[in-house]
Length: 329
Image (cartoon, rainbow, N blue to C red; front, side, top):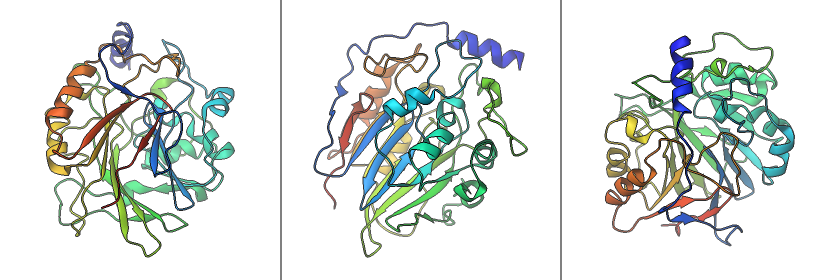
């Protein structure tokens, strides 16, 4: 614990920087075609055929040093876009910057949603949500080393969305150490307030399909809310020839793991790459985003561009911007 706390302080020692030299994508209004909306940190929202899909949003973002954290309901309500159609809320891991706001979002903004995540994520969420709204996706995740045995698809209630959890790893923060790593071993009665009690749990990447009325795949999305060491988080072989349409990558700590995101992009060959989790989230101003302290964002952009397929585009969005999906193939 003392070592983790020391690393946390060192992590915050640098200064957040203006995104000078970064070609940020800014589309403040939704396009007529299907689109993603980046909510900041690891949060993304999309609407598809009457259903919504939400990757765990984070708006509270307390100022440094955030040793004690509680959800800022007023800020969540002010920034959370309309999402009452969301049926699936996917969580990658249990750190507070991904999970802290989820209980309030589910109670206030996504009344039809179920949360899908690891056992640890579920045990934390049970502090404020009934078991009926939480799905243990860890039990059915695709596991590294078994490409012929993908995980199980989890279907939305409306039938137009499905998601598969994938065994992943959280990138180290400093000196090979993942801060606040580990599991929560029992169902919690109240949300943690100390940052070190928001445990990582089993990290999950996600493969998501958007389905038409006949159940055919129209779009396939691969999502990671943390950089991971290959092959953790890589999409499994699922028995069809559908290409990855959208690859959502995490910029934070990208250079703390080997060959990220190059190895992943060479495998998935996506048509659209979206770079998220690049902005400093300690007491941030969502209208004036700054780059995470000590982060080489330009390096991530350069490597991503070097590994893009010839027909692919890359978007590094501003918070709350919309990113149009490519035309269906």
